Length: 361
Image 1 (spheres, rainbow, N blue to C red):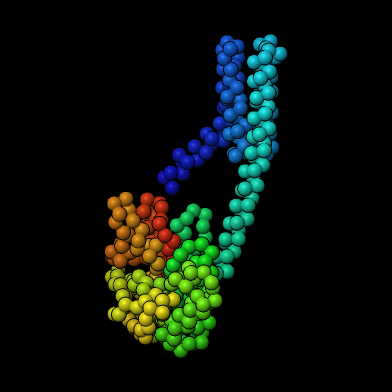
Image 2: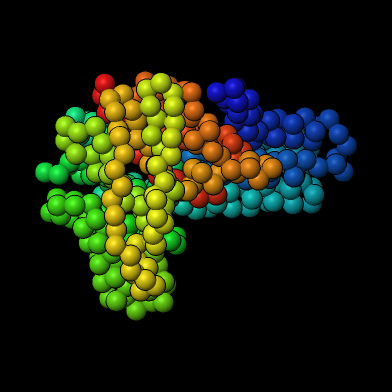
């Protein structure tokens, strides 16, 4: 918020620049000898206006530049001089080019706006916003893209109520681009179906493993066969103050107690990420921990824990959150996102997905 004043002032100055160029050019041409020319200022005005103004504004700026040049030449009796004619033709030519540039810029802006709408629709379809309260639990999610104007990448989250409790997943697909988004869709689709049908969290993890294996077999690219997904699956049984976790190579969740105590929930035995079953098979074992009333469970991807500052130090959410309290899960995630960006100087190196669940007291 502190930078809003200077930024707003700079924008105002930039938008006034075409008019200032014309005024300065007029004074320069009028009060200096005829061998001096302000043509660069008059040509710069419509060029500066092209990306800033509407088509009408760009045309008016070009017309103003040409009229001021003509008026000065008439006033000084130089209208038919060779240099004066050359200057006028130059300004007219650049004004026309500025209008064409404006058309291209506006068309690109419209295409970008369309792409943003498509990206937003894809995000809503692949990563829909869950309800704020599911199964008696307070839920909040947040997705922070590292790339400017990006909306979705390889990170994922999902929440599903089921007869066996509220089930959650947070994961990170290896890779970027459309391939990663496709893998996200596969994992989330398989998770929602399995979370509803499977009686154990271990069985849900195995369903996801098989879904990724089928996709790898179906695709022809080497990248598809080499892909994998780190993930944490959680199960919060209805009416029980416990959480069950299956961790497949993912950063461990954090449990934030009401008194400010924070503890990590790492797996007792490490396991391979989903999609790497060909390298070995180990039976999934859900690990159970207490999840008392007033506590908050935080699941996140490594975009949070691997955010670095200028000295290369990682952001440590467990240390940063210790001793602090938050009114609700949404406030917790907002704080994490803001602190991670500040820690990394405003430039995240990886996307991050955040999911927080609070059990009411």
